Image (cartoon, rainbow, N blue to C red; front, side, top):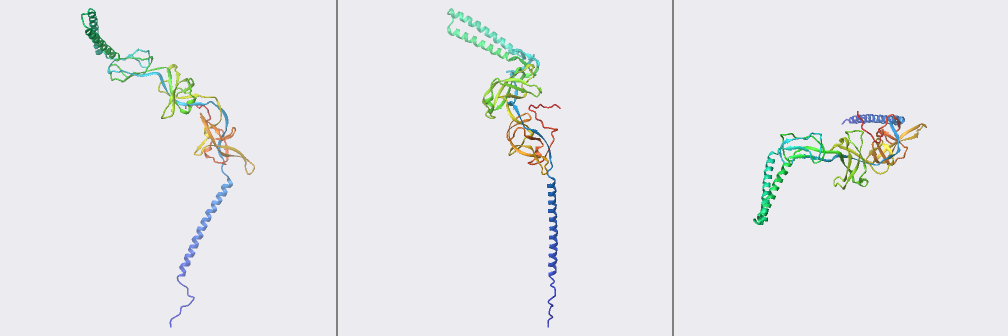
Amino acid sequence: MDKLEHPDAPVPAARPARRMVIMLLAVGLFLGLLVGFNVFKGVMIQRALTGKGEPAQTVSVVPARMEEWQPTLEAVGTVRAVRGADLAFEVSGVVAQVPAKAGSQVKAGQPLATLDDSTDLAQLRQLQAVASLAEVTYERTRSQFAAQTVSQADLDNAEGDMKAKRAGAQAQAALVAKKHLVAPFAGQVGIVATSPGSFLNPGAVVVTLQQLDNVYVDFYLPQKDAGQLRQGQVVSLAVDAYPGRAFKGRVTAVNPRVDNSTRNIQVEATFSNPGHTLLPGMFTRVSMDVGERQPFLTLPQTAITYNPYGALVFLAKAGTGAQGQATLTAQQVFVTTGSTRGDQVAVLKGLEAGAQVVSSGGLKLRNGTPLLIDNRIQPANDANPAPQEQ
């Protein structure tokens, strides 16, 4: 008879399953404790920060104030001589003389340089002699024609030959004259670019000549300003070579057409130039007053923050804290800006006179940021700033 198994005997496969369950419970408990600890830590840090509050930011402030501005048009220009030319020979040859001295003042017609013209002069004398003989022949033929000893054809041939010989002599004289370079107008001689013995090709610049008692300044303005331009308007000029010095001139011409590529209009102003201070080619800064003075609400340019949504400023707004203490916080305000003047910018909309505006430190602010005012150092706020020499 088979032996019967006892009903209470344990099943061997149940022990590993029990161990797996215990291990999973332990891991889950560990992970739960870890997550709970991190959540608890975050809550405590947030409570600490909330209790402490946002730190105050140190800024400087300025009041927005009304100022009268003189509307001006500004541009960059270039000095141009009233009369100026780079002088060259029309013919080639060897330089014989250079009487011009660099930097000297010359009169109109004064010799500046000469090419060797000995061969051309000899040929000119020959042609002049031939022309003289043709004149004598013509006079003799005319006398004979009056005595009716020669025909009209003989007289016409003699006259034509005389005129041809005269023209040949005149052409040679013109060639000789081209080998003498003279001043076409009175002015100041520049650097002489040749010396005796040098061979020059036609068109090679020998010397520059500039008349500098008066100079032109050419500058360009946008077409929107065309209605404000008039001949005779006073123009102020500044150059880097003479810092702090202002030159005064007047508009003498306004181009009657607008440039197609730039949509700008060219303006010409004339300046008196005693001492020949202004030189052709100089870079200049030009300003011109237009219209009457106008009041504008003014801020330093550092107070304006520009972003894709527009221009904004931060106001220092006074308030009261939770415990009744006085507070200052930043308030963001969008504004509409206008023209600029030196370090200043005009505010057209969004701000009232007297408002306390953050002038420096605005990049670290947002709405509601507590403020600490320190005005010991203020940004530049000059309507006419000048470069500082170090």
